[in-house]
Length: 158
Ligand SMILES: [Zn+2]
Ligand SMILES: [Zn+2]
Image (cartoon, rainbow, N blue to C red):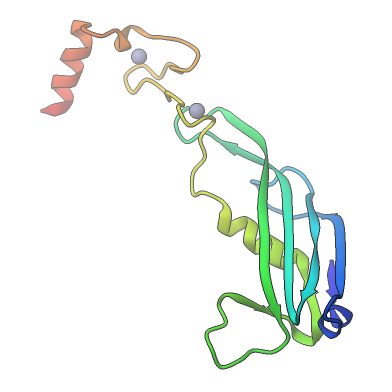
C-alpha cells in the first residue's frame, strides 16, 4: 500500500490509521502479511508505529520438523520528507510524501528474521549416532553409561 502522507506532514496533529494485508512472496512466509498501525504527526515529528503479523513456515535447524507459527514484527520509524546532511539511518526519507509501506514492512520483517529456526528453544534435535528424533523418542545411544556410547565417543575423539 502506498500511503499519501502530505496531510500528516502538514498538520501537527494529523494522523493516518491503517489496517490491511499484502502478499509477500517468500518461501518462509506462509500467509498474507497484515499491517496494523498508524502514521501520526506529534508536534511536527512524523512517526510510523505499526505491527506486521505473518505465518512463518520453516524447518527446525536441529530436528528438521516443520515450523508454522505466527510472528509479529514491530514497524516503528520516524519519517522525514527530505534527506538532511546528517546521518539519516534512523529516519525513513519519504519522497514526495508517498510511503511504500509494503516495501518498508518487508524490509523490517527480513531484518528481524533469525538466520535459523528452532521448533522450540529446548529442542533436543536428532541423535548424532542413529538419527532418532530425541524430542519424541529415546534411543540406545542416549542412555548414560552405555558402553556403546563411550566407544563411539572415543572413536570420534581420535
Ligand atoms: Zn526441533
Ligand atoms: Zn541414537
